[in-house]
Amino acid sequence: MSYLVIFEQILDAAWPADYYYAHIPALGLTTHGSGIEGARAAANDLLQLWLAEKKENHEKIVTPEILISTLETSDAV
Image 1 (tube, rainbow, N blue to C red):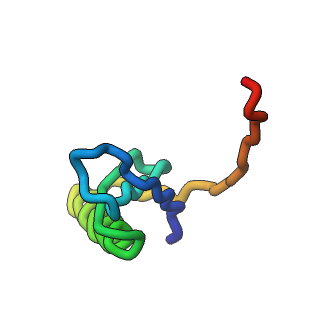
Image 2: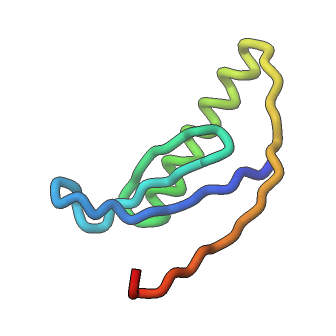
């Protein structure tokens, strides 16, 4: 199974400068980690825990369709 992960730098001054959120939108999961690799590892750990819980509860695990797009806007908004 493949799940899209979106990384977003955390800009809150209360966080260290190199921290990123890792969002798994299809599952509504978000975690964070130091740098992209730290956030990726945290997302993988969270995904594995989520999958294990679903399997333990005999729940169906759905593989979502993944579509990606970008939107651009002018600076004169």
